[in-house]
Length: 436
Image (cartoon, rainbow, N blue to C red; front, side, top):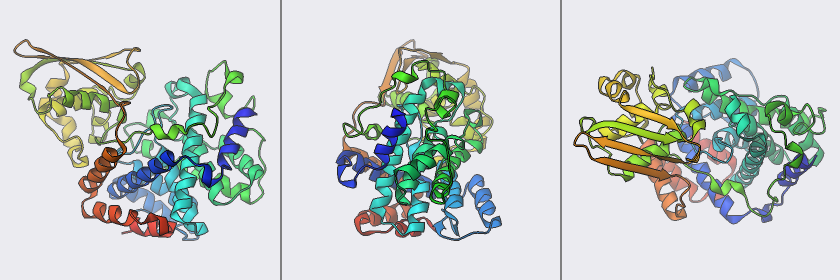
C-alpha cells in the first residue's frame, strides 16, 4: 500500500514543514476561488443548488456563497459548483484538474463548522490539493482520456484529505475516510458544456466532507481504497505498471507550486491559443483580414475544446474555432459577460469558424498551442504560446488582483483588502465575505 501510506504521510504533515512557496500559492488560490465563487453566485446553477439547500433541513454551520447557511456537506456542494459555474478557476495541468473548486469549498465548510482559523484552512487545502495531484498522476492520462473528470475524481480524495485534517482525524480514521471516498468519487467529462460540469466540482467537495464525517463517526472501510486490486485506481485506469508507481517524496517538492490561473473566462485548454494570438499581435486584427487559420494542440484537448458548433455561451467556452474568431475580432475573453448565448449564433463567428483547422499534435504539450494565420494579403503569421513559462510571483499577484476587480468590481476590492490580514482571520470571516 505505498500510495495510500504516502497520502497518509502527506495528510499528517506538520504545519511547520509545509513549503513556503506552496503556501503562498495556496493563498493566491484562495483569492482566486473567492472571486470565482462570488462571480458565479447569480448563475442559474447556483440558484438551483441554493434552492436545494433550502429544501433540506440541517445544522446551519457553513456559509453558502450568495446567501444563507447550511450543513457543511451541503454548503460544500453548493459552493463547489457555484465557484466552477463560470469556468474561470485555476487548473493544475499535471493531472488536468481544477483544485480550488473541489477542495476549498470542503475546507471552508469544515473550518467554519469546527471554528478553525483561516491559516489552518489554507494548510488543509494545500495538503488536499497536493494529494489530489499525486493521485491524479497515478491515475494517468488514460483515466482522463477515458472520460473521467479529474476535478471530481482525484479532487474528491483531495477534499477528503482537507476535511480529515480540519476534523483532526488520526491516521487510521483518515485511511477510512479515503477508503470511503474510493467508493464515492465520481465525475464524467461528458457533462462538459452543461451544468453537470460545475456540479462535478461540488460533488468532489461534498464527498470529501461526507467521507471524513463518516470516518469520525466510526464507519469502517477497506484499508486501501486506492490500490486494492478492486480499488479506485485499478478500476479507473488502464495502467499496467501500477506496482512500479513511485510518488515524488512528500517533502522534496510540492507539485501544487505549478498551479496555473485563468485570465480568460473559458476552458483552460484554450488559453495557450488565446495568448499566442495576442503575442503575435492578432488581437483585434479583424476577421476580414484573415483568410485561414491552422491550430495545433495536444490531442487530449480535441475531446474537450474542439466544439465546432456551440449552441450556448457556455459551449463557446469549449470552442477553439469560436474563441479564435473572438480574439481576432477584438472581443474581451477575460470578461464573463462576453459569453452570452447570442454569441453562439453570431453570423461573423459562424462564418469565420469554417476557415479554422484544428489538428491534434502529440509533439505539442498540454500547456502549448501553435499555428499559423494566413492573412488576406498573403502574409503568414506564426503564433505560439506555452502556459508553462515561468511567471514572476509579484506579477501573478498583480494579475489576479486585476482579475478580482474586473470580475466582481467593488466586491473584489473588499476581498483584496480583507485578505491582506488573513493571518488573524477565522474561517467564519472568510465565509462572511462570501455571504451577501
